[in-house]
Length: 299
Image 1 (cartoon, rainbow, N blue to C red):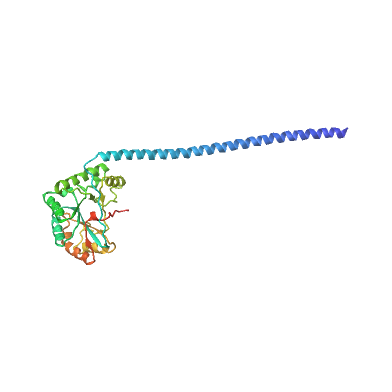
Image 2 (image 1 turned 135 degrees about the vertical axis):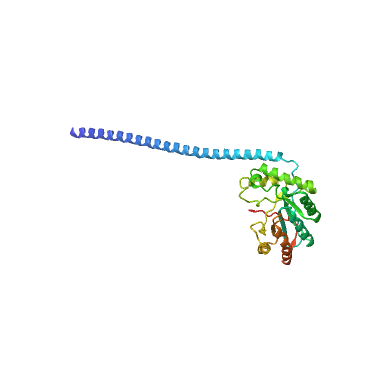
């Protein structure tokens, strides 16, 4: 009898334990399920957040592109007569050392002396002229440049960095004045230019890429330099101007030499004969920049 009661009690205990185990498993399963769903919810939220960030970035980029496209269209409406044929560099059949003389900031009374020296030495050069200096005498200098076979380039009308680099439109406006004045004086549609202070300077950094793209679109080619006489820095002597040219000359087979022909560059004109002779002694010929592949800072 006792044995039978014992078995019944044990069986009851076993059933209770099994029921409790089932309840615990169910709770654990529920907790795990909830935990899993919570993790999934967090994951989805993170994914949406990242996606939203990407979308915002893409929308901003798209907006910038739209603004850029609109801006480009506005450029196209400006100065419809200021489009030129791009340069076609000369390909020499044999390797030659060619030096390219370039003069900025003229014309001035100094320019006449420089043109005379170049003519005496049968040497061609490129002049990047400022429209604001083209007076009656300056007009005669431009005509003489063309007659002697030199090349004229644009160096803007004003050379005023606060104005020309304030916007692309401002640069085009200033540039057009110089372009038109040179054309009216010489009949030449100039297709090369040099940025005041070079293409890579602190003044044009906010519009540099847009400006370069727009000028290229119009067919213009710009030239920087790789040798400088440094004749517009301080008050260099004739000797120093000459040495500044010669010390870097041999680093290049086709050096572009920066010099100046403004009214303050009297010593540049005075030492030019010696500079020409020294360059020729090093085995260089001379040519104009429109016959050379562009040299541009940063490229």
